[in-house]
Image (cartoon, rainbow, N blue to C red; front, side):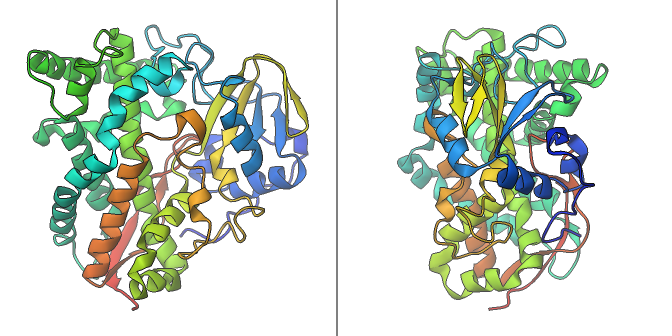
Length: 418
């Protein structure tokens, strides 16, 4: 069962700490190491890891500073992109995928502007009623008092439905979106000599499917789905196959993992702190804040990576041009200097919105509003029915340091304490 504080790893010299090790995330043992780095060396150099040498940035303020200096700390796929994995060179042939989150200005700006209108407040207003109806329909199929897999029945289904609507994707094939997302975000498989090529084959199958959809819609008038928006935008209508796949992967993973893994954390925090859910049940004005706190506590993408374009001092350390700099959002969101009792879920935390889970600066998550709406809708529907999801068994966690999430989570619905 999930515990309040991750078990402490075997003590080791500071210079040997490597928080990129997959088993730390699979076994939920990362928190103590990140806390130690925040306390002792918040900008820390790891000279050797499975991903090569890298800097860890673990305090909220230092992460914010690096994010604000996009002209110094690059996201470009040509230098390694946004994960600790990348080196700016293909691993298995044609697998260097441009996407706007892994671009610097000005290329980033034009491509981001293409999809941003799909996530405006007016679009959220348009999508809200159907999202509410689908969430109600799903919750009403769930058993009360019986164990089931919350990830499969709730988190995956709700987020996959939403992605299918955003892409106007064939409804009967919508679970392919989850399948592709899981492969795309798996940085451990990406570097494996057997699984890496298999992963790319699967992702190019994704590209082939979406290319058919592109060709079918190319002659049509503009529509609000994301494919149509890309077809009719000057910034994206002439994308290479690699750019098309890269941006599809970005939108699929971004639309799936942030919401899915935050949703999956709800039964866990309810087991650990049921009194916090009771606060929300007693005061429904806390729903939006409770959503922000859930996203902060879970932090569904554990890190973003940058590459230094020039020598620069960060947190008192000399970062050299070309260095790999890993911004541990997971750590910044537990920084006690910003979030007292940061390992706890506190529904009425005054500054929950200061979390870094959506990033900061020019690369802040374009779909943040939609993620918030999906989570708030789930809270509202559950509370309307007087239901609380509670973890009942050990989760199966993602085996990697990028996507911080769950493959399975046993849970049950019980009557709300308020």
